[in-house]
Length: 518
Image 1 (cartoon, rainbow, N blue to C red):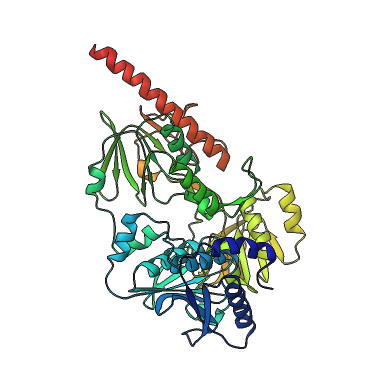
Image 2: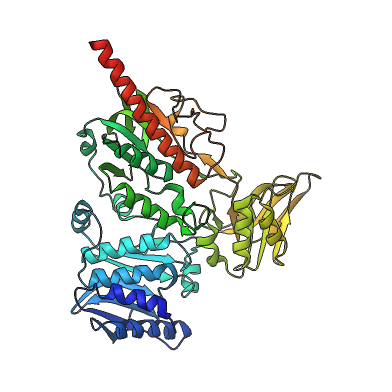
């Protein structure tokens, strides 16, 4: 049975929310994937009188489209949308039935104003937590604009097609047959890439803030909530709401929450922030911070925002190894998310660079999917926790190479090997493989600040116990600072601390100004 009883019980509640009839047009063969797809479709139809099924011939087999009776919406699922994509299917059923998607009216207007023909295809892995974001965004666009179509393609079900296009990272989005983008993409990001963006003049008209937060990760969200709860004018500028959390899979150390996943936590953070009167400016990157009478924040779109205080919470990103081949073969065998991209390397030989917790966790995850994993660690000993080391050393298809300096990632059109130097002997070694996963820690997203605030040699912003930086009125929190430990729960606390520090600064500065002018 494709759907177990628990999932069917939950699904039944959602299907009751359908507002109109939906027709599933099915193109099936005699293969196992087709049989599984037919079983899924039949179960859906049996659960709701609003769902009808019709056999047809689509561009790919097995696949099925989700339509209104008498009207093709252009939404197609090629393969069986289970795993992380099951939610994409449920939302498609609801939205095609007439239930409005949960997006701002401004975004709806942007989608509906798009002219021309746009045929999107997204190659996914059912274990990828980022893929549904792109799939659901493009499905929404297809529902709202008849000029847009979208097909989700399970790379495992259509392996030859995916390999023929050289797809080695998901999600990989194609537009009208040409590569469009790879990686997690929200609706607004897709619109921006299509040339539909917010007018910078909209930002220039904004009144000065009391607290302006730069960054939408755990620390930024926490800072915005704590500031808004003080009843002061609060804004948040985020390049992507959720930050690096969006790339995190299982989270088991957020106290009070036994288990969650990064995308779900990011969605919860955004939903929580929206409970307050916070001006959210998503998909915007800060370019400059300068202290004048107020603190000015220039965005990359040219707009300048002003605020009494600013809290920098721009987080960190995966550190690159900066060797020949890394940039050239990114998404062509070089990857950074083992959970997302691991299934694309099924039965192949891969390497993991890094022997810390993230590297060893990646090796353990990959060992269950690929043929062989080689862990390459620069130091003489691995730095991961003991329980992880015991696990990785017990796996028969994992080899650990220590005291090794990665020299080059080799390949032609995609990765075919890695070269490293034995630091003890100076000897050079080459391993033939098809994939390299880089897991060597984080680098703070602070280069754009220049000499504006004091930073450590590693680029971390120096803060005091209140989150204050070297510039009056400018605070910082989270992984972009010199915090001793980089953890979600610590970032949240630091965001709250910075917001309270900013509020205290505003009170004291206001009193000082009143005293001076009295």
